[in-house]
Length: 158
Image (tube, rainbow, N blue to C red; front, side, top):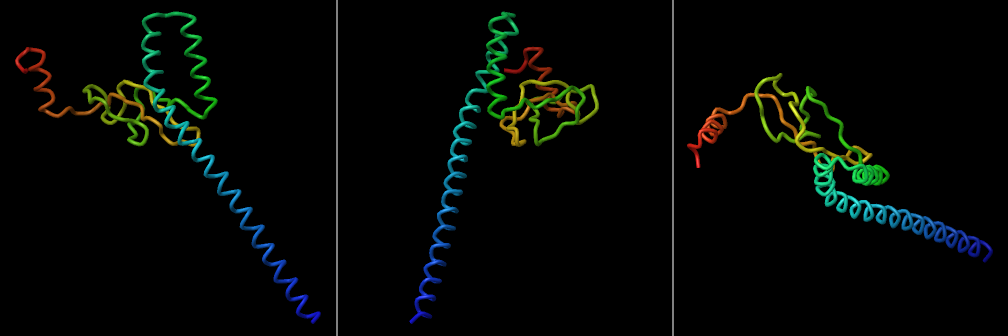
């Protein structure tokens, strides 16, 4: 009988240990899922906000207003506080399809390098690209594209 009691006690201790481990795993999984939901919501909001930031920056280029500049600076700080980083790019950098989007091809420089920036790009602090940098890339424009541009300049193409 003492042996049966010890076995029963041991079985209950094992069940309790399993239940505690299951509970611990549940808490960890719920916490991770909550973080993922918050990240998805934040990412969606930031993606919707970036075109507004672009518009405000274009407006500031024309207005040159100190108050507007301070508001833009504050907005940029809020984005950084939430893990959003601007992707740095310079003319002459090598084109990288992982962080750049070719918006136009232009003649004149070393093929495959960046000729100019058309729109800023952003990424999360973990490196995930939110929006690639839209750039002009040096390279050979297709013959058809050159012909269309010439026709547009002459007014022959409608």
